[in-house]
Amino acid sequence: MSNMCITNARIVLTDRILTDHNVLVCAGKIKDILPKERCCAETIVDGMGHYLCPGFIDLHIHGTRQYLVDNGPNDLDHLCTILPSYGVTGFLPTVCPLPKGKDADFIRTLAKVKSRGTKILGFHLEGPFLTLTGALPPEALGNADAERLKSLIKAALPNKAIFSIAPDFKEITELIPLMAQNNTPVFITHTKATGEQTQLAIKAGASHATHFYNVFYPPDETEPGVRPCGAIEAILADENVSVDFILDGEHVSPAAVQMALHCKGADKVCLITDANVGAGGQPGKYQFGKEQVEFRYAGSPARFVKDGRLAGSGLTMNRAIKNACKLLGTDLPLAAKMASQNPARVLRLDDIGSIEIGKQADLVLLNEEFDVIQTWIDGNCCFKAST
Image (cartoon, rainbow, N blue to C red; front, side, top):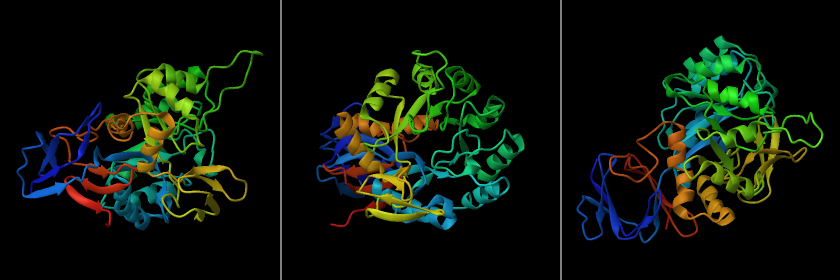
């Protein structure tokens, strides 16, 4: 692997943008960040004044364009090759639940995929330990079955199985420590839990809330006029729990994201896509399992054709960053951090997520319109826009 020096780019760090430096890449890692006048490498890349960002990490994605993780390993393989075009250098393929037995067999087939592009950082299992389905199939609601849990963890090897759970799921605190073994994060979602139930789940090892606010219902009111404290309040109050949002302008109010940033700080809020089949493609109708979903405009939510209910999003990660800047008014360093360093921290990965010496050279070149110009994974170019 040759040395590469990226010049004439605005380098997006976690807290500022450098305009007078170059990035030197050697053996797949960032070797140095040099003053602009110093650049000695076998390959020189002209950044053309574009933004050089750390590669994006999507913690929650079901599909993109015509490909869906639930369709099997062939679609997963294609996803790995097209996600670099949206700046995604690492992701958690997200799997909808299947009946017991079939689920482990299916995960086992996915785990055999060897990515030719975006890194598979684990498998996100959105069920079966949930209490509310949302847009998921009925199989999302299972039982506290430790043997089933162990079979799913084993099936995902050599990757991690990262579970989304509901704190109000019966006996979930018995399962969370098993899920959290080997420094594995456990996500919270699809719940109507009380604050106390959520605190117990956090104490047991849950550490992150995915598509926060969506399918997070408040508990039933028991005292007229007294708003019950539920999962949202317990999560916002705990400084150790991170959150992520589907920032498409419809799934969640920008005010809710801004509140989370105030409560959590800049290190604990992430952007995801929760993208469904059809995301990144043309508006229109797409087949999602036995149902059809529709995208009314580019980047819109996916909605079931039959009743208009939400069914994931049409976001791509570069569009999510654009929305953070436009809808929240954040600067690019914070928006990029929410899509790179913060998700890396959720996954307990310290060798990716930011442009720093010694980290993997997972890099994205963005123009002013947030279009991806070029993407590198471990220093290798995996996407270059046609000119």
